[in-house]
Image (tube, rainbow, N blue to C red; front, side, top):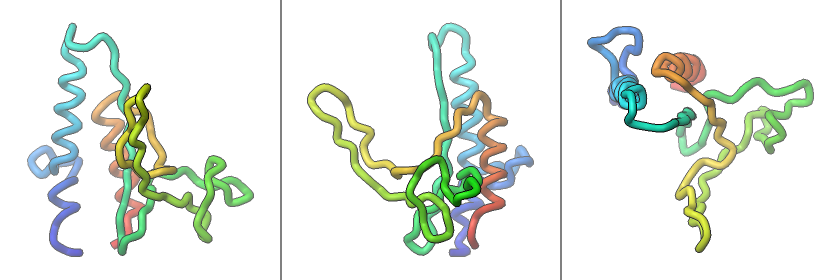
Length: 128
């Protein structure tokens, strides 16, 4: 902790000169997707996973309902969905997803601004 990993990856998302790797990459992705004739269609989704003291957390999880249930997912004692790393190798008929975080929320985004908004929301929920 305290070595600047988050600063390097995110930087200051509202300051062009101080943006980190993720905001710059997101802008490049959407610029490429916006080039006329390059793609017939596209769909982009974003997630935000925090690993803190070997515990996985979804920083974009919506609030629990009145019963403490998040979108029908199993949850920790505090009500947040349990995340686990799993591997989907696929089979002979379909390509697998590879290693991914089970129960990690995905949010459809249409622009770099959408992603930067999710990053700002996640920053408020980070543990330091």
